[in-house]
Length: 160
Length: 160
Image (cartoon, rainbow over all chains, first blue to last red; front, side):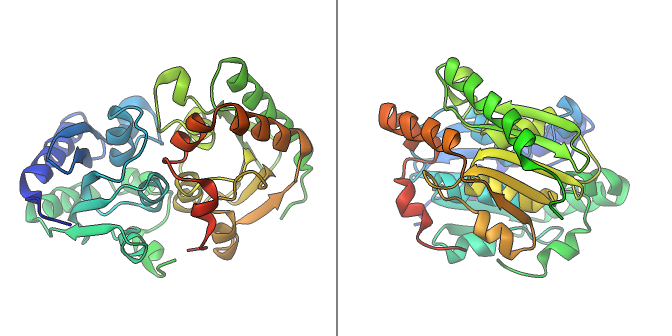
């Protein structure tokens, strides 16, 4: 598909990421939209704020959207390439498209999703990249905790 | 590994599943243990109870365990084969072993995890199978909603 303009969608996810940074948390934001650009849910990583390791940005946005019978006509927008946990969410619930702010500082499961037929748009947004680059430099222990205690470079060595 | 006895671990997950059933929810339970059998967190699916589609049993148990620097020495026990969302959780956070009550009524991502080196124990527990069989027969619309609106048979056609 991708008849939509991803820029205003990413702007919402980036707002969420900045909220997370202002709260002292992991600065990753996400939002779930319908294919007409209607916002269904938005959220950001809440590991620090809620002491909740399951609250990744995509999961938070998915939760905020509430119960739905299916997700075929939805778009997940996230400031950062989705980790395996969030990529699994996209696969299981059949989310049709994922818009990604950047995949430079972390490369999660989006190639796997593309191979399964999920629409993937990587925007290479410099603001998103700068945000994560600064965060990883300032709080490496928090970042590694958020992705399971491993160096992110190690988790990109295969594409299962 | 698997020097541990999985039966008492599964009993905890099954208790959680029965709590979920008693609450009118999706009857799937899970718990996270350390390799000495110490309970780190337990929970059950809370889609109905909290209106939260992200609260699968494994995610609920993971959340209940709180923040941890890593998960190498942990065991996730679940009454049912983990869906892709929950399998992604196991992969991303490096959970070392998954004990599964049954994989008959639903076959999620545990073969994928096994191929990635995660220890997998499928117990083929008749009580777990009976619980899910009855639930799927009674509430098919709720079950399909919980796994993204697709027939579970359709989502097992590959092992990516």
